[in-house]
Image: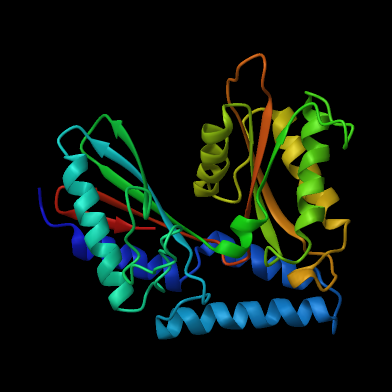
Length: 290
């Protein structure tokens, strides 16, 4: 297997320093919807200026470069053991080159590893074997601020009068946004998983962030719920950075998972405006970034 380290290094640099086109378009649209001369519009302008500067100077979009989460879809001809080694090597080199800030802290000793390498769970790597010869790696950099405001609910929830139905999902989603206020670096994006166990539910709620923002759930009922949650979240007027305004949530993605009859979890992952994700696809000698 060829040494993919330089390609993974470039994926990390690109993800840390350049927002995807669909995210940047959404932020620009949000700025245009804010009232002229308002604090919210000024905040959005500052965000967009920061995005441009980061791309032009190849510096981090945010000082919190986040947890590196890799989603790897690989052909059977690849060794996952070697892929793990390559990814970890690229993460360490990216940290040395300052594309990533040293973020891996031992929770028992408080010591920072200095290279973003922890035990088996830092960086985070998820594998899925696929047919064909194309290797695809998605990287999501998820900051601590937006991770802190993610929430998981167990339906029914008597405090919110939320039952095991889509109305219950709507209620807990809006509660999560309200509880977050500006602490998740709004305007943000929601990934919602309905069902699963506690672990798979949270995983799926982050995996939906890999989808293009213009896409919607294939079930029209769920697609309508995605739009409704976004619309009603914006009525909360939390606004950019919690300073008030029309742009609180810029998109919602929902996925449904099978569950046990005894449990009905709704996991809500929050992604801040610095929605950092990119993909690399490798087929033989052909390498593509998007």
